[in-house]
Amino acid sequence: MDLDQLRDEIRKRDLKIIELISERTELAKQIGATKIEQGLPIRNVEVEKKVIARYKEEGSRYGLSGTTMAAVASAVIQEAVDSESRLVKKEAGRKAAVIGGAGKMGAWTADLLGKCGHDVMIIDQAADNGHTIKECASMDIVVVSVPIHAVSGVLKELDGICGKDTLIFDLSSLKTPFMEQAREMAARKKVCSIHPMFGPSATSLYNRNLIICDCGNREAVDEAKALFDNKGGNIRIMDIGEHDGYMSYVLGITHAVNIALFTVLERSGFDFEDLQTVASTTFNKGLDTNRSVALEDPMLYYEIQHTNAHRDRMWDLFSEAVEDLKEASMSDDPEKFRRLMEAGRLYFDS
Image (tube, rainbow, N blue to C red; front, side, top):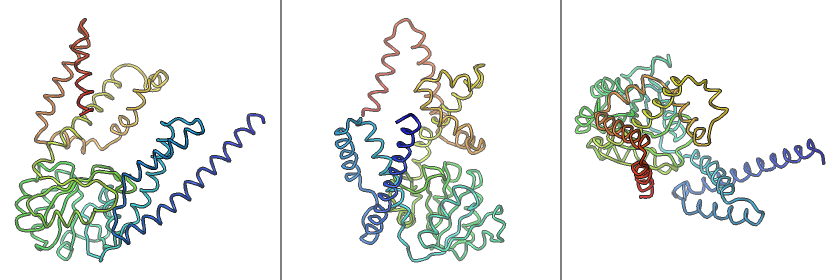
């Protein structure tokens, strides 16, 4: 066969692979439906490990690398469990309002609640549907999905509108600006605080982290957990006072490092397309994340950096680390540089 004929044969195999993945995913959906009926968790990590091991073992018989087989297995598992996770159990319909539901994360939450069988109302000027915050008086669930600086004002309004049986929670990336207000309300109403650790492009909760912050009302925490439970996600419950300390590193330092990197690149004098022609594997690995950070909403990222009460500690450590790295890399003695690298390895190994 000539080159074109060989490529055509590969194309046929590719189509067959796609067809088989589709068939596998449909079977997974049937498994997911059975799990929902029986009240079983969507995700089973032990089964996933066995599937990956099976791919690696069978692949080795054909001379295929374990790394490739593990990657293929992980991809088809994610496709399957993602599909299972979208088969949410229909619950007794409750009335829910999403304030800021025309925004990306608000729309994601509204969609999830709708799929679960709840009657969802979008309250957002951008939606131009005539609904107002006053209608939250008749709601069972109220979700606040507005910019960080606006959460406090919305909670204050809801405090005067909603009864004690309405579940109220926000989706804010930081809690410091309204934490005491949330605690005070939680003493009288079902108030908690939620932080989805993923963006609105997530097709399901599969293997994604979601934080529920306890503001002092355990009933609110349990009720909020029930809304997101058994959908393949990883739910962490913590006191609202702990949240922003974690976020100073999970979000703050991560954003800062990426912003610093593309700022250095922009000021380097090298054209980006030119750099790509000589890019290393390490450079390319971080490029997608770096580019996505550059495309994010500057005001959201500013608020995450500016309003975190733990920012000073984070920036002190960041500055110290940069200075230590600079000193170690410029020293003729490699020992300090080696110690920095070794400390990193030990940290991840722990």
